[in-house]
Image 1 (cartoon, rainbow, N blue to C red):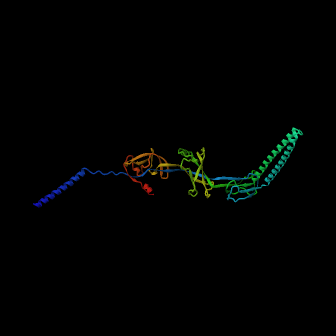
Image 2: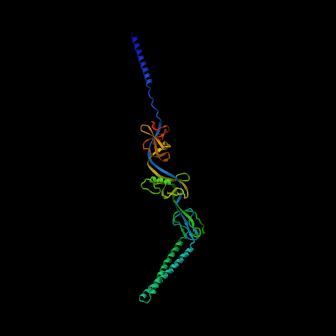
Image 3: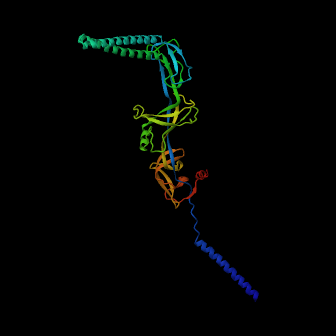
Length: 390
C-alpha cells in the first residue's frame, strides 16, 4: 500500500513539473522577448579651443641692409687701391687714391689769393683809419672818406670770397682720397689703376655691402590686406595692444629653415595696379652671412593669431551644396547634423567660426552611415586617446 502511494506521489510531481514546463514554453511563445537594438558605433572627439597661428607663404628676395656705390667725385687718374677685394672694410677706411697734384695746385692758388685779399684788406683798413681824423678836421673831402670806406668794405668781401674758394679747393682735394662711407664687405674694383675716373670717365669704383642684417622683400595680395584689416592687424606697424608681432621665417636653398626670425617693419601704403599686390619688408639678422643679397627664398609670415579659437579635425567636416556640416552627439546619444561656418584650415585641423561650442562631442569616424536624429553608441577616438597619453 505504501509503495503504491509513493508511486502515485512521484507520478503527480512529474506531471506537475511537465505542466509547468509546457506552460512556460507556451508563455514564451506567446510573449517573445524583445531583442535590444544594435546602434551604430561612431568615434567621437570633444571640441577644443586653442590659439591658432595663421600664416601666409610668399616668394621673397633678400636685399642687403645697406648697398653703397663708391664713386669718384673728382676727375683724375686712379693711382692706388688700398684694400683687398671681397674683404671687410671699416667706415672711413681709405680705398682709392686719385692723382691729387692738380687739386693741390688749386689749393695753393686759393691760399695765395686769400693772402693777397687779406693784405689788401689790411691796407684799406689803414687808409680808412688815416682819412677819418683828417675828415674830422676838414682836411679831406667827403668823397675821399667815402672812397676809403668803399675800398675797405670791398677788400673785406674779397677776403670772405677767397676763404670760400680755399674751402672749396680743400674739399675737392679731399675727394681724391676715396673712403668707405660704411662698414661692410667690398666688391671687386670696377676700374684698373691708371684709368681716368670721375665726371669725364668711369665714376663707379666699387660697392660696399652691409649684410650682417638683411631685408626680405616680398609682395602680398590686396585680399591678404583686407583680411588683416578685418582682424585689426596693421601689417608693418608695431601694435602694443596685441601679444604678438608679424614675423617671417625663410627657407634656405637646401630646403632647411633659417634659424633666425625677421620682423615686418614696412608695408607699402598703396597697391601696384599692374600686379594687384603691395610690397612688404622684413628685417632679419645675418650674423654668419648665410644669406646673400639677391637670393630668392620662400617666406612664411605670421599674419594673425586666433586666440581661443574653436578647432575641429578636418576629417569630421562634410561639405555639400547647402554648406559644411558636422555630426554632433547630444547627451542622449542622438546625433544632430549641424551646419557650421568654417575658417582657416591648418594641417589636419580647421577653425570653426560659428556652430560649435567647446566641450561638445563630434563624430570624427563613422559619420557616413548616419542621418540626423539617429541614436548612436559613441566611443572615444583612437587618435584622441593617443593625444591625451602624449
